[in-house]
Image: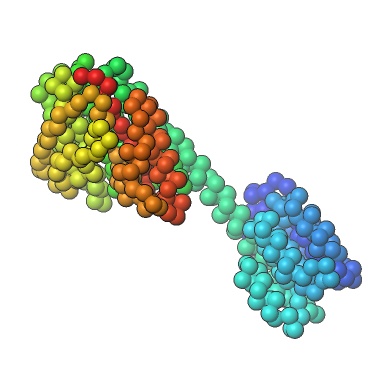
Length: 396
């Protein structure tokens, strides 16, 4: 039995194939004789083609069930190295072996650069040929196992990401005087995010708007956001009726709990910003724990609300402070994570995108901003989560 042979039936339901390509019928028959016992023992089919074009047509239709291709180098219609390059384009998982002569070393080198597993010199000897094919099949099996594992991991990550979105997507308070717009966008490959946001109404005039960013990405950071959400629900419910409750008190309490709940883990840093919008007083009170400063968009201009503080998770006795800024009808308060201002953009800036996107009453404002940022990335790939929470003051 070939090492790892039993795994083929676990990975693929369809019977796997070894494809042989050579323009000389006697060579094909010789290869078939040499490999018959091995293919039978491995429960694999041997497919023979005397034309590389026919071989390509077959592989294109059955690429998921082809494990190995053995091709001659010197063929009149197409060189073996060119043929195997096209096979790689159809399916990178297929293992390739080239039959060649000593005089074709330059073509061998070129083919190796495209992912050739091995080459066998003509005339071959049976035992080395069988050994190379056995190794090729084991490698193919390992690749299929890896692909299956990656697919399963991606499914788990995707499920975790959907659960996180569901837990974060609490319906926003509805009030004609104020409107909320959110876009939450994790790194595409990870599905999960360390970004956190939420909005709570304390009474008919006060709204607590929150945003946070757990250091790191993926499942670990997302798990901490679940903890944060649970903790915040607790403190908000406890203080809904307290008219004097301040954002700095929320950060002080949250920092203590994070330090306590995560004290056995490696250093887990969380930046956090809490904003209390008071429509009756016509202002917003901000407390910041190491997070990027929120911005106010007013009459085509942007200005930050600065409130300095240390990120949560360092020290359970940290103090936090409040800053207050007046609000006007038509203002848009913007809270966001650092993936937005730190994105490397071509020919524009985060601030310009905000200014160019702003339209009064646009409930899709946040989504449009992040779409524009994504389209302006210099390398078209981003490495950080992006969340933008917009609070538009319609009237006071």
